[in-house]
Image (cartoon, rainbow, N blue to C red; front, side, top):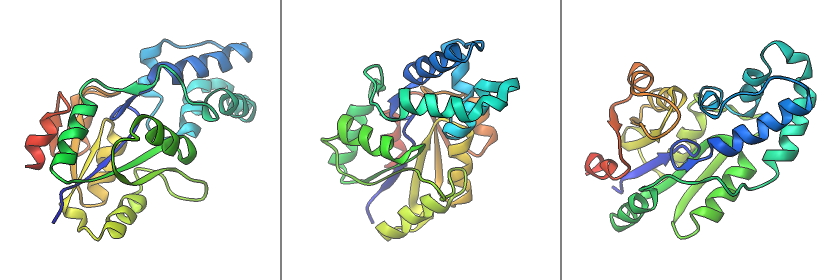
Length: 213
């Protein structure tokens, strides 16, 4: 049976926090609200755009519809030049291809953007399934989309490695009965990942090779 990995996107494959923060701060400034430091956004993301905007607005939630509209115009409908793979990700993917692994992506980023980033930045890699957040479909940590990937590939969920950087990813893996790999180069720390069920913790991308072997 082929080794199969489901990767989260933001904070796992892609370093996207700068562009997310830049766009959200521009929206907040346009609404005459306080902005945040880049690192603060690491705790706002992970559960999709809806939760990001809730976190950023805090006590100004009545502006949510307008903030969402403006954020979509700035962020969701564009690819951003500062968003790029983390150091070591291409090297990891090269090794996984050599091992003939099944590669997939499951993100809470909107589905269109998820597919566009994978198509643009990972065009040389054979990702078999790429899924982002879709309307009227449960997002992570609900396991349904992860289980759908397992079903499409005809792989037992217990044989799949789910790779992510937040508690949402660890919870998704546990709910789907998958093996959870928590990465430390993303948006959250080791404590959060372990508390929410990480089976493995890695500091560098290539450490994943040793785990799946």
